[in-house]
Length: 385
Ligand code: GAL
Image 1 (cartoon, helix red, strand yellow):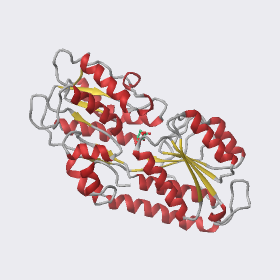
Image 2: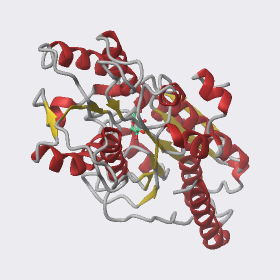
Image 3: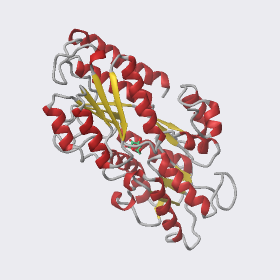
Image 4: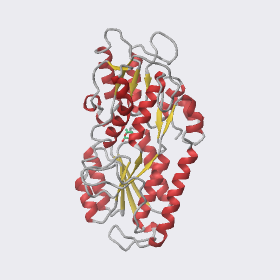
């Protein structure tokens, strides 16, 4: 699937919203009323952390796009600390923001803040991660998270040479030893990713093509609190010194996020695996990922990490801006999914974007041609600014 499709979808959504949203412009339905022009409105943007470059990119993208529309923006990152995020959101409400865009650290921890937002008529857009257990969430913008997991499962099979929907020509039959990692259990996305991946992998585990030598196949056993790289590295080290102490080799690792993948790869390298997937008695296992973080894109270019899932944060930011604008103009944002994201209290109308799997050959056509990363950044393994 090409970037052109992504852009076309974004443009179509923007156009249809513009078409139905024009009338309401200037009505200023929220934030205590009265204010109307974007210049008179401010939007609070709460992001979880700056330790992962994707969230920095998300935050900056949302800010730039909102500012381009004329809004004032209050952007905060919360250091992956729940009280910090609660306090930052509290403060935004006190400062009188007219809308909130929030990527939660813990999807269940913001109920008090969201009640305050609702009391002040402030619409809340849940960004990428669904905020749970609160009726005061107005809209959700994200990617198709189940499909992310399916893509990760397929990428693992493709990397191992096993036939799957994305690569029907695979001929490998295994058995291959794999290990499974999942994200943070307080992040609703972690469940979608894992369930999506297991929908592809479980049949191959059942028929013996794949063997999870540790026996750890429940999400609770394989989860990684706060998506921490170090935590994943430690668990991989423990697996290697435990289940693989007899010299059996790991052939593949399902990792749901590039940061975890880098921790897993470090553990594998320290145990003598790699550095490339080619040759050698101890080849680097097939390791999946997500987010196309620049350090991991370089690892993919170098043949160390096998794949990642590209989620264009510029387009997600665009959808968040489209949604915020619609609310501030007195309209409802257009949803393309009104079934799948039940936050425990109600189904949240959602706008989901598609995703794309990236192997080494896809870096140029998918990431560089779309100007997500430059060739120089991929070469250096770090963002230019
Ligand atoms: C998830 C997000 C992933 C990844 C992960 C760790 O919520 O959907 O793309 O970024 O958090 O930050």
